[in-house]
Image (cartoon, rainbow, N blue to C red; front, top):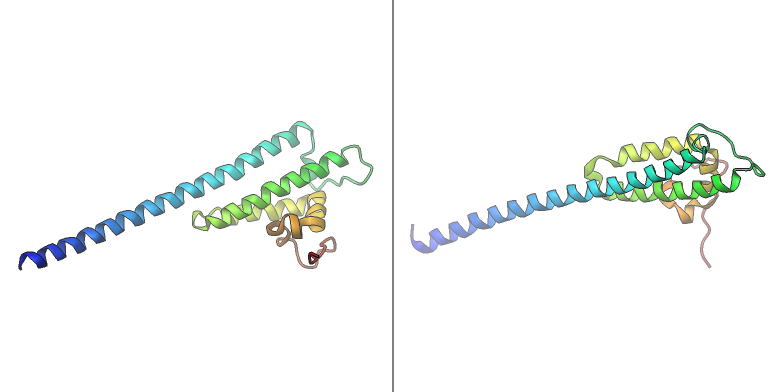
Length: 154
């Protein structure tokens, strides 16, 4: 083997090794981003749930309690429903963006379960979700009687 051939083979080997290292670094970067996204979504949820617990509003979100118009907690519950929808929708987007982490399915399941156990959340998402929380709105069954179809702008 002459020197040019040896140098060419060495260059190819070095290029292959460099490519493999770059792929490993990319995988590590994606894993780190997925972990950070998951932690951010869970941190927002934990903080919100602490406020719900403190105000004794958890039953409106996790136990199917109704909060009819005129109820003393109605304004607070509606506000928290919007905040929870923000957290849930952001979580859906973040988890979907990092699907390889495997965290999207559990987060989606949590969102579906909470929509099913919270009449006020379902009501809020059905009424405004098509434009405000589209990822969450799409989880509602198409035949949901509360679901309001999106309107075209303009």
